[in-house]
Length: 253
Image 1 (cartoon, rainbow, N blue to C red):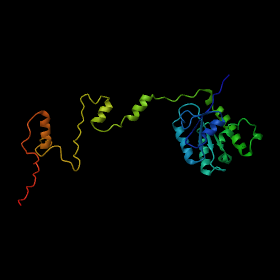
Image 2 (image 1 turned 90 degrees about the vertical axis):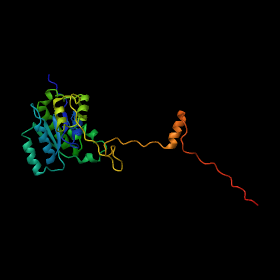
Image 3 (image 1 turned 90 degrees about the horizontal axis):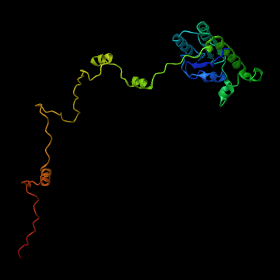
Image 4 (image 1 turned 180 degrees about the vertical axis):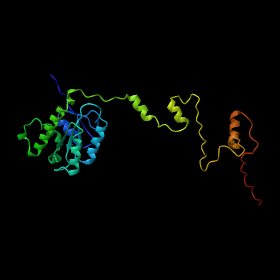
């Protein structure tokens, strides 16, 4: 006995009804990871259909996915209808789902979408009967495609260390640096890249004088030198200290 697995639902962009379809069909919500999706969700616009064509261009061998198109309004525009007819030849099936205005005023429309395939059609509100009929057509189309008979191919997982190294690795530049990175040789093995000297900051003297001698640092003041010599036990400098104050002499009577 062949057991069918749950379908993988992915959207070509955000806000195309991916989560609603996954909840209603009891499938796996893959978000925007469309590489191994059984159902591709999109909007009934030319831009969204172009994204579907781009995803199909990178699809691998095997059965084609089913495209679920949620309309923006009541009717399908003529350019969109022509594009849907051409897309029907490239995929397993194209299922058009109507727009549900009723869900715009609900606080939790997913709770109502989860019971669309459980309740009988006469028990559903009139606004949801067309959407429930399109869901049944979508479920039958993905079963006929044969994609649910095999397990989904796991996406290639890149180790965390490789992802961090690739994100931190700078892009190769021209010259010697590019040749070093292309050969994989470490930078310390006989390769040294000379960097030009930095120009002096404005308002500051150059670190070298005109005679290419290192600029001497300013000598400390005489009082500071005297204090340093006093600490080392040397003699006092030759300059005199402060003069004592003289008392004024009394005038003769």
